[in-house]
Length: 298
Length: 220
Image 1 (cartoon, rainbow over the protein chains, first blue to last red):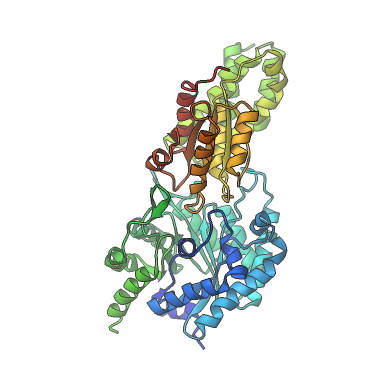
Image 2 (cartoon, each protein chain N blue to C red):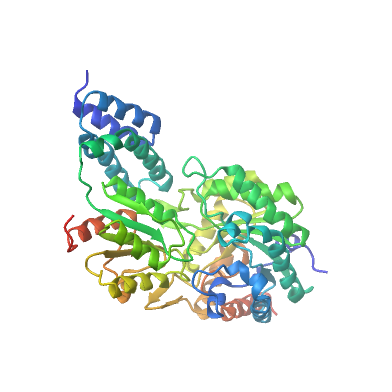
């Protein structure tokens, strides 16, 4: 039985999460426009293979394939009535691989809607959609809810509250995507790092952080700003840089060696959970593992 | 009593504040004062939206401010829509927009639609997850001059190429111009698939559409 991960973090340990899933699925036959979450039902063996690769690379946190598995988003694929099943299966798949070697975190992405008054979506509808997904994930006994790629603080707060409503004992890690603007880092909806931290703390988040949208160098700056804005532990999952497109293909420029080289700065900035977002592969995680092991004298 | 110019200016300012109720009321006042719908549109609503677009481009304001301004713009447009038709105000051109097949993200695309309308274009918004055939069919049936495609995912952007190719095989290349955009999309990608333009953000997309409208081979 693994010790609760928050305890380990509070004792100063650094935990390594897995890397990207979406870009890995694309290499394994996810068709352009298909639902990545549907892979849970149609290709469970692919997800388990990827999980195994990340475990072998040294990750100790597996994140579920449920980024778009809220009722609201599954409805776009005609899968809303399978929300409970899909989320439960997604956890079971990883749990079977993780055993007592790794934690299983539930991935929760944005609803894709714009909340009132800026858009037409009623916040209650989004709250209910999150609650439905999170209830299924909690019943499948996830170790944490991992809110990812959030661009609207109001929605991230809603998701945090939804988690606390349905499963108050499951820690919430709320990570948002920032972009560098003329006046500093902000979300697309204009939330500053300070506003994000204040709002998420109020909503009850156990950890905050950032994922996607940036490579590791900008993430180091973001982590430093997060650190000054909150005392909560931080989770940071950079992209392997920003995508470079050519013809049909898309590639991410930052190598495992590059990420490993910059990792000490990210740790110094205060990150407790690190991992990879778009474009990172098992090789990136392996390189990060080596740095962490050397640091721990292993 | 304030001058027409002052009233039009007030409309533009209410719109910039995102005050939809005030915008609607001021536009109604302007209509009652017999200011033409074209003037209200050009010197009130579009003038206000231009300022908002410029501020967004300069990063002085954020997306929510643009969304609220757009809401005010629509409130004003609702009032003058019947008059624009009876005054036979010519459209600056028609653009079909949508997020490409498989892509359910539409914040960026919606923003482009808002800014295009704000600049006086007619916009046919096909929503998200739009198949290449639908882009092409709609461009034909609506007599649109430009098709705008958005993608946020690297997994879906390849659908843009299929639309560009379909226009070509139907002999519409040059008649219906294409513009693409979205987070993973680059100017280089636009060139490589044969799209006519790339918009790096919503404001730039409008500038590019203006440029494309000047070069389409069809007269409308």
